[in-house]
Every structure is written in C-alpha cells, then in structure tokens.
Length: 310
Image (cartoon, rainbow, N blue to C red; front, side, top):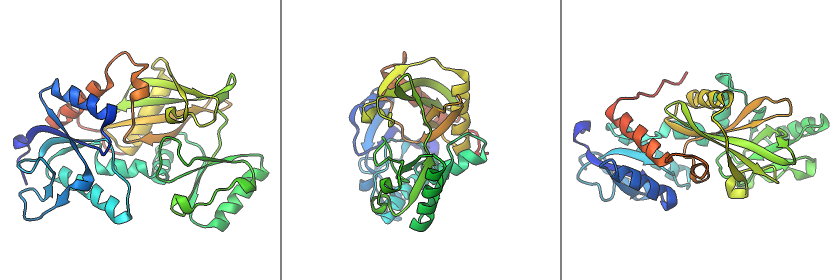
C-alpha cells in the first residue's frame, strides 16, 4: 500500500463529460496548487502486477492525492460493478475519493435512499418498490381508488428523465426501460401561485451552504426540463432537513431536493451524490467549485472527518 504522504499533488476528476463543471473544478484546484486531470473510469484497469493494482491513464507513476467523482458511466451490471470497484480500491489504497463509492451506491439507488431516509426519520413521500407487475397494478389501483396519484421513476436516473405521473390505470408505463423495476412514490401536490416549485440544497460537510428554489409550469421542476432557478435565503428548517438527509446516507457533499405539500410539510425527494451546480451557481454569491475543492483538500489533510452513518 502506498504512503498517502507520497501521493502526487494531483486530483483526478472522474468524468466522461467535463464541460463547465470540470473546468470550474480544474480552475479551483489550480488556484490551490493542485493539477486537475480528467479521468474516465472506462479507461482505468486493474493490474495486480502494477505498483498500486489500479492503473489510471496518465497517472501510472503515482496515485493522485484525491479523486473527485463527477460521474460513473452506465453500462452492464459487470461494467458498473468494475467501475465502482476502481473507486473502492482507490479508497482502500489511501486515496481520498469524494464522494466515495459507498455513498454513490447508497444514493444512485433510489430504493436504498428512500429506506435510509425513512430509517433516519427524514420525512419523504410514501414509496413502494417491486418487480411484480401484479403487485404494482394492485398498489396503483388501490391508490387511484383513494383519489391519490403516483409518480413512477427509474430506480437509477436523474434530471427528471423517465419520470411519469400515474393518474389513471392506462397511464402506467412499461417497465422494460426501467430494468423491470417499479419505483413508485405518492404524488405530492407542490403547486403554488400557479407554478410547481421545489428546492435544491447543496450540503457540504453536513452543512447546507447554498439553496435555490426551482419553479416551473410543469410538475417536473428540474432545470434540465425547463425549471427556472431562483435565489432564496438559507432557511433553517429547510437547511436542517437537508443536512439530516445528507447525514442519513453518509456523504461528503450532496444536492438534496425537497418539496412542500399542501399542509406546509417539507419532504425530501432525492439525495444526489453527483449533483450539478450550474443553476445553483447562478443564484449564489460565492464560487461553489472553490467550496467543494476546499472541503476535498481538507478531507485529504484529515482536518474534517465525515460523521458516521447513523
């Protein structure tokens, strides 16, 4: 195992699409004396004859001081498992992985996220997950008969893609494109003054540092789907609930999504382990990439240990 004190002054930015976020991270790292290098997990490999077992293109001589995960590309079960293995092994070798594979596994899987939130007492919409079409149809029929609607989401998904509102038996989508799994949440009416709204809270080191409200004429409020981002204050009830959600999944940083039901109750709907922050940056008065990099470097220095998962 390599001595962490001899790791290269370089941060691997794990991504297949660097774009604006990658450029922001590289700039923030350079200002702090670290080189940022884009790395695709699809190009890494395991070689037990190599000094460190994991071979990262361009970093064969020494492991990076840290890894900032901006994306884990999809693929077959075996491919995704191998890519996550790379992150697990790097952490075992003394490299700071931010967010680490365990946190990504807990949050990319919406079923696991929902269970962890529930177990930790974080309010979240009623949720059901199953493979059986008969069980799903029975559940949907029961909820519809009670005048409730449901939202069906891909178990692995982001940016509102593949999310469907079920308000009639005929609106139940085919799950072939969702891996054969029904992830169903009770629909929460979050429309206010003619627009749907929710909140994205960025939590770093278990502290909410930035908040925005998303508003849309459509019930899916993601910025990628046309939602507008608006600056809001760091409201304590909102922030405390987002912080509670981040602690529940044990994560370095997260984008936590919340909405408010008709009775004014806040509910956590998502905890994102690889959140984008382009929209949030536009309504924040500080540089978000710099805050994230500062926390990563502090974690490398061992100054801010992450709290354990409850």
